[in-house]
Length: 286
Ligand code: G4P
Image 1 (cartoon, protein in one colour):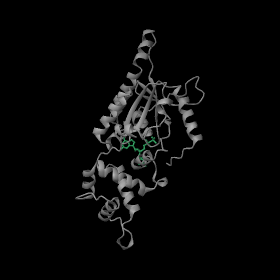
Image 2 (image 1 turned 30 degrees about the horizontal axis):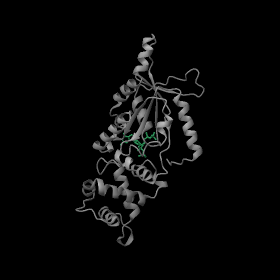
Image 3 (image 1 turned 90 degrees about the horizontal axis):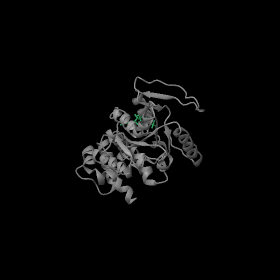
Image 4 (image 1 turned 180 degrees about the horizontal axis):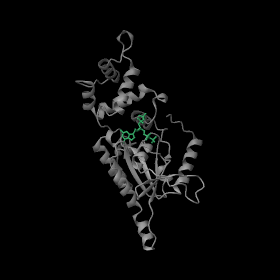
């Protein structure tokens, strides 16, 4: 999918999310554990401020555990309850349910005190494209996927998916845009595959990614591409990798597009190891 957001799209997306917020008790915000800040909508705090929020760092299977802990600590210190998950394998799904329940605990207690039996917690999943929203909805829904039909009084037809007795999920997630006017954010999104390759300059992204790895994960880079040292010049690093992996054009010249594609494909698939491309401290500096 190509991300093409224009001011009109953004306003519409925001309106759609705001409509959905009226129906729910808890917002579950999904970010990519490899780029926890770059994969968020820049206005998210303002947009969802009226609702309790659970933050999920998805694709934690591909991220650096040490950095994931730092990010959890960072968001928690801002008062946002945060969990690391892997929606594909279904890791920590039970904690999502209990996390949502915790967020409405006081409200539910007040209802109980008035003699009202609390209902299932109504939840909206929200996040930028490709962060794993559909994967998570499917994983949470499992076999007991049961649509409860429209609610009376709701004009636009919204379907709810039951997650056990405890949760009801809106079946269409809220989709928001990332902060792509920031070049570094765009490079991080492209490196992790959130922005599709048809609209990016592959070589530029691969240069960013290889420079980042040379600085932060040199041993993984050396091991994957069988390098005794990492060359100082980026073009030499491309040459070494291209040569070893047979990314060549006629006359034995290195095919830089092919090399870029290979490197990015392997990074995204976790072939070099678990990688995180930003730290909470980067955002203080930036
Ligand atoms: P979206 O609804 O937010 O747009 O995202 P979606 O669920 O479609 O997920 C996007 C891609 O991310 C999918 O890959 C999905 O399998 C993968 N994904 C989701 N959660 C996880 C996770 O926890 N770990 C890992 N490793 N991958 C995850 P895909 O269908 O293969 O799409 P693509 O590779 O063509 O982008």
